[in-house]
Length: 495
Ligand code: SAH
Ligand code: SF4
Ligand code: F3S
Image (cartoon, rainbow, N blue to C red):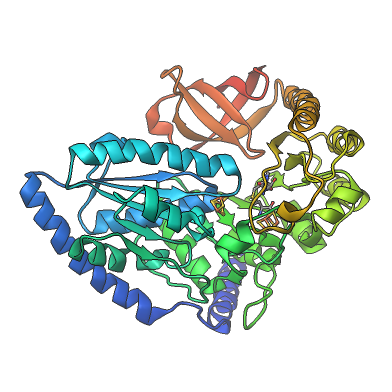
């Protein structure tokens, strides 16, 4: 009887899944993905020729400068590079082809790229066959390409965020020409699936569920360099995760600038919570994470799906940016301090063990020390498990850059230090609460400082270090949290 019920449940589930998989119109541009695979074959011929000249397999190095989405793009670039015959290496010095996947969210990201480009130029002068490509968000910014053309003439290829799928085609053009190849698109509506990806970790993976952003927070350059919000077809997402799970991936991180608005612009709209429910059903998958959530779009449906799930991790990254209503309005964040606090209370009521983390900005135009006090007040009340605290960086072309009341550096520094202290104290207090608990950790990697230890990640995103060996990587183990070392733990595996 029980068995019979079990079978019929599965049959029912298969029908449901079948219905789900046929309901949505594919967003994949199949023609383009076929064309790009042809270009990969052509590029492979050039790589093989180079290999013959060098007497070894040509080496490549992709350096990531930005966020998780940038890192995922790097995995796609590396997927194409290894497919056409390159061997991936860690050090730029050892590579015959170096690709900088850039970020431009704050000014220091741009400066790091320019700084390191000088070094790449000197490497290339000793190794004339070396190729250099620049791509990513910074390339979409006005003025950057002109500067590269003028001051960094040794660069071979420049492309942007919208045409990354064309990487193989662009490489063919690069191999067939001597001058710098530049291809930057202002926008795209294309989503090209089924190109190779080379994952950094065998057991966990990021998955793009959407691209771009429509929010236009007044300080932020992302909507200008990543374009309008576009959601991927849910079928394609599920198929990709199913393939990953078959390949040994136990944890996925669903990626988007604002995952809470996933699916709203699809021909057949679907909510993010519904997508999560489908992802949860995938066999073999043990943990689901997502980022980033915009507070204005976080639904009760999502909280409920999280609460009921034992695969969705007990962690939510919920950027606050500022606790001052006046500043939040000027930032165009579209929530108030009270609305944000009510939301975090609701989350904690539903899931008392949830870890909440955030992003904070100090020094937005017009911000006073009293506004910083408001931000500190929210930190004290929410008691964040962790918070990234940034100094406001003026990004040309954003509304905030044109605001007249930019805050003097000394005032920003004072506010930043004050806020950081509270953030750190709160995070330490939160971490200490877990002492003595036994929790499940995903074994991720060998500890850099002490190679007899492995580093694991708890569902709430906290790290714990414990004696174990490399064969445990990718497994979920129960760990006793023995000693709190500020923001992380040391412990031991328990049966
Ligand atoms: N889409 C995500 C985050 C994108 S950028 C979100 O909305 O939360 C990551 C973080 O960088 C932001 O949360 C913000 O805190 C910070 N940031 C963005 N633009 C910035 C700027 N001009 N100066 C300082 N920090 C900035
Ligand atoms: Fe930037 Fe705001 Fe979009 Fe996040 S939601 S990427 S901060 S514009
Ligand atoms: Fe990410 Fe930086 Fe671009 S944060 S979206 S890589 S500007």
